[in-house]
Image 1: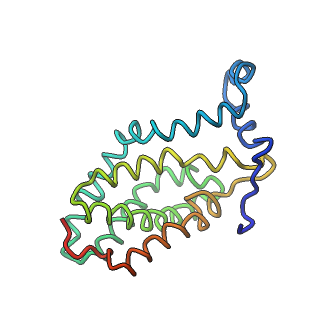
Image 2: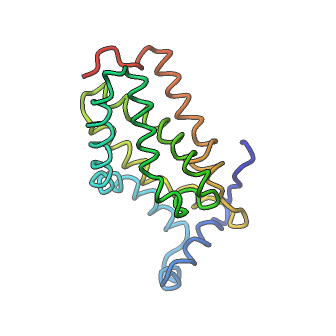
Image 3: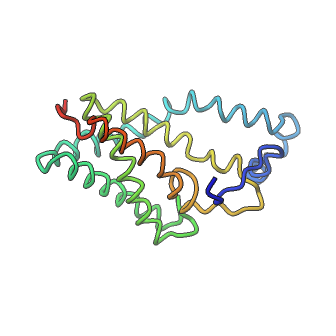
Length: 195
């Protein structure tokens, strides 16, 4: 809708290009259609959060379980913002190496901090509202599982600039920010009685 991303749902050229870059893909593509591979990708969304939870648990235990709790004496909003910013800074070495924002490694550090503050606010709300880190772990692992979906539906002729598209870019921040605003309007955030 914002003109930053061109879909190719008919030919799946982005998926085709992505698969052709994988070693041994010719053998798979002889036996399995692109649409079948796409269906498998969607099916993995049911399984991947459980697998990714092993890795997301460590981050969520650190950021929402430990750090957020230690920062709460400053107030919920400062604790949420600071824990999200630290989470974003934690990604800095990978971002500078070209991960997540390959077209903008330096600017990507700043963009990742913004992204982590936004998503961190939602994950922190889950942690505070439930008294458990597990909802944040599942949300984080699901986010990681769905992270590459933008590449599957893209037109292969376009360069995907993650500063603008996918959940990492400013267009992807709109829905999570609207969710945060809704939580504020409904007086669910800040959490009145953190658990």
